[in-house]
Image (tube, rainbow, N blue to C red; front, side, top):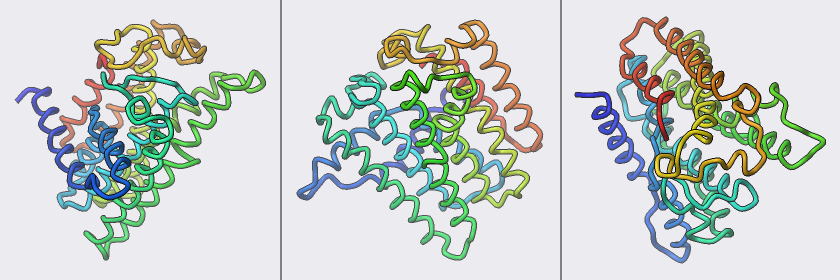
Length: 298
């Protein structure tokens, strides 16, 4: 089986898990369920739940306690995109080749759909407690999940990003850009891999190393996003290109130039791979996934 075939098989598997946790589209608030499900079903690489499950298996995990967290992390990621696309933020009407949630359901319902997915993600992750009621690792995983998604994680990075864009008194510096990338993009990737390791019973040192690997992967992933915003096309990317320049937004490419950005993606991802190899475990698919992510065209 080729890597692409295996990748698609895993995406299909993750989609089937996510579907079991999506709300039924019924009742007086049916429209919010429709907007939530539209947002989640819009597609994507399912990178975060995939990294979570692969890390879980790498450390010997083999139960279904991981599944609520897999669905929940994708809900968190999706809500962040729904809010990111809003007129008050990036004001994008297309994502993954489809109309964004607010473009279909209106701005107010776009806000509420994001709010609903955020809350529903915690409801979903909490279902792991019933699957392993005597396992303290579930509580530790839930704590990581909450922290990495909040003001000390993804939301915190977004706050600094927005504040720097909106104020001439608070410009983006290279140091601040690194901080934004570590939190805004890296935090959920760190959360995903750490939760996989925690639930599989990894040691504290192993979990700490996994966090370092994920941080490097997240940075490389975000720099590649910056590169694609300059070099890709709408047809390949599924969303408008050149939006960073249009919004006068400083990126890694702005500070370092395109050539260095491309080479840094390669360097940082290789550092992540070397740390991964240090575990001495069967991680062939994870290494291939790292390569795929940094060479992707969308």
